[in-house]
Image (cartoon, rainbow, N blue to C red; front, side, top):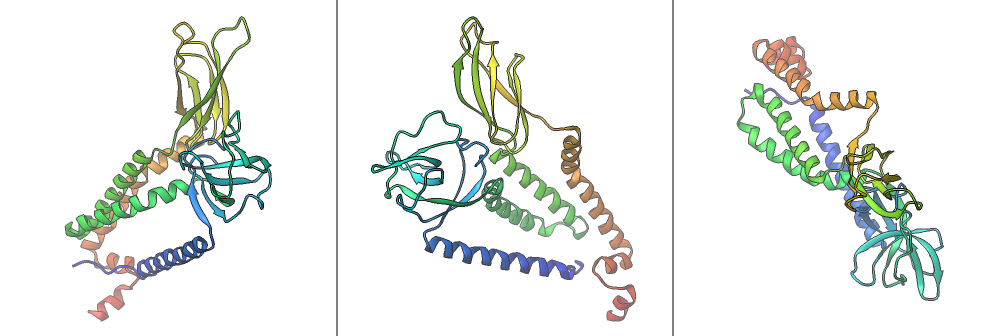
Length: 297
């Protein structure tokens, strides 16, 4: 016989449902007033809006927009969505440019293309928004598949399944480590190689480095750096790579997080087996005293 769920389980589920309903109501109201929301997918705004930033926009017009503001718009040619800073304004519209881009965009933005001005933004939240539907579907599948597992093993199997789902979603989205090339320039005459500007596009700090070469730079999410590449000068091709670059305590935290499913599974298995052999343990985990349980039976 399955043991009853603790009272806080229903309370937590109810709070989650109410929270999602509240977010849905706020989202519908914001959209009705002309607001929109996006997740940044390119590093063109550098540390201001790194990849994976969730942002919202408020309705705005060219006349209301000031130089220096960050706006979201659709490009006149392809209709692709960009979020860049306004660097100029005249009768033909807005001139925009990404903070790490060397030149301004090749178009002028009018009211027809302007989506709105950025109202607020939260780094990392965009990755969460992308991952949440996949995590919810995967967890629901795990819960259904494990319904027929023996009760004493069900929690550990569900924890294992949830860990696998989380790992697969993390592998699919790959938010942790990333590197993009912004461009390269010539080095002073007489020197060998090129100067390449790179930018980190992952959540965790990295060591951007020249493959088989000495050049490297420590970068955080959205930060740019210059690498003087020399190894590929003879063949005219230069390779760069990225590796996770954490302090010692960062590695300790990472290992502990990775081991969390293991020790939690061991704890839940121990408690389930103890409850199966000692009803008093089961009663305490359900929030009842052994005396009360005996009277109820």
